[in-house]
Amino acid sequence: MEYVRLHKEKQLPKIQSIQNPYSLLMREFETALAEIVIKEKISHLVYSPLSFGVLTGKYLGGKLPKGSRFEYEKVRNVGRYNPPHAQQVIQKYVNLAKKYRFDPAQMALAFVISREFVTSTIIGATSLEQLKTDIGSTEVALTNEIVKEIESIHKQFPNPLT
Image 1 (cartoon, rainbow, N blue to C red):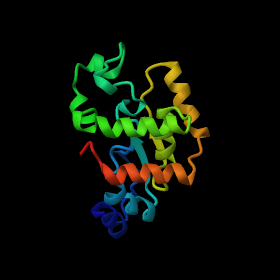
Image 2 (cartoon, one colour):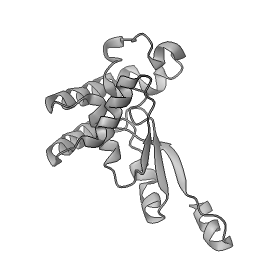
Image 3 (cartoon, helix red, strand yellow):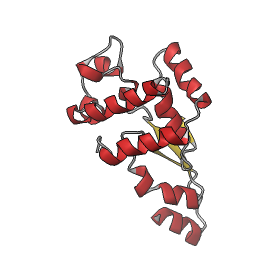
């Protein structure tokens, strides 16, 4: 906001975009910056909308799939994105997606891109199959019922990765 103020006061270039994390597991942006990006018309380029892939469910139960980011990064981001205390929440989101016959990644991405303050997402697909899944999320329409269930999970377990 300070730069937005200075931009107006001193006729500096306007901030065009910011890049912040946002996902079903990291929703602090909603209370921290969403109002500002909407009001000031600043693009929000979301990184890690799948929380480093954990919202796919592939790491549940301590799994470490061959070729996965956590395997080749040798636990660099495991503590941040896949801590033990978040497993229950991750499982709830995966179960919700399956209940409605959605791919967990597609449901998670569809939720992120449906938010008014999100301009675009930065995905980290490591295979053509993942890329197709991620792109397919643009065809997923979340009903009010599904969003209510997402909000219910979030209310029980707000921002488990912070």
